[in-house]
Amino acid sequence: MILFGVLVASGLVETERFLAYTLVTVFFTASAYYIRTIPSLSLWRAIWIVAGAGIFGFPLFVTLLLVLGKTLVPIIDAGISVIVALATSVVIGALIGDRLGKRRNYKPLS
Image (cartoon, rainbow, N blue to C red; front, side):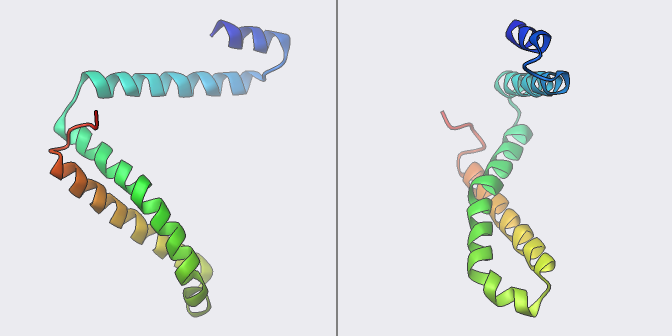
């Protein structure tokens, strides 16, 4: 905090960027504290679903765009095909994350 204050005072960092960094830092620190101290089954299930959507859904989305992009874009509009590919990959990734979490009884990896 003091370092950011010195950077803002010296003019090396804008005030808006300083406030954005501070808010993001406080938010993620509070989120990490909440996740570690108040474990609940629904919170861990949500974490598993979001992690599955990110870890499995994003590569699936890229694969769908690369493989099916050349075949779907001429048939359907490009914007609609990207939205369909994104929705499909996120849902499939979330289902995979939910199944993996259920297998571990939604416990964190440690």
